[in-house]
Length: 113
Image 1 (cartoon, rainbow, N blue to C red):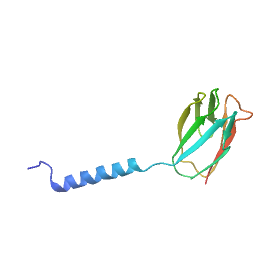
Image 2: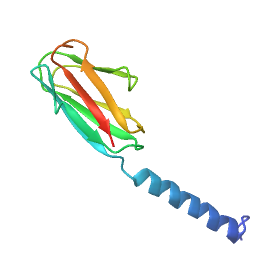
Image 3: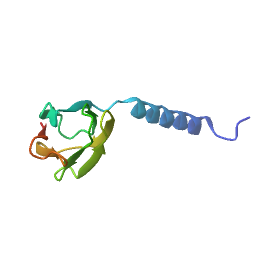
Image 4: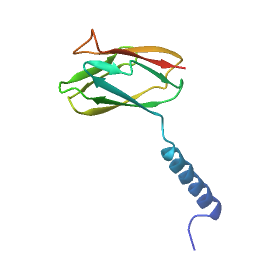
């Protein structure tokens, strides 16, 4: 005989089920490329109030840094590599970002709507 009452076991199993479902719920993935010292696309539209997985591919042979004061993020991405940056949830609005190593050309913004 189990030392846990059946009602407690049912609640425990329900808790595990909810935990597994929340782990399986994928957050939106947005892809961004760095090519010829430019961010492509330069504007990304994302859902507001949602955590986002931003995947940045650096197609250039040289490193670049994804930086945004408004998003409070900075990440160096080596040439030919990719980086994953989690952002949000964001309030509706615009959030500029730039490449620290090529700030005149590598510019973009995230638009949360």
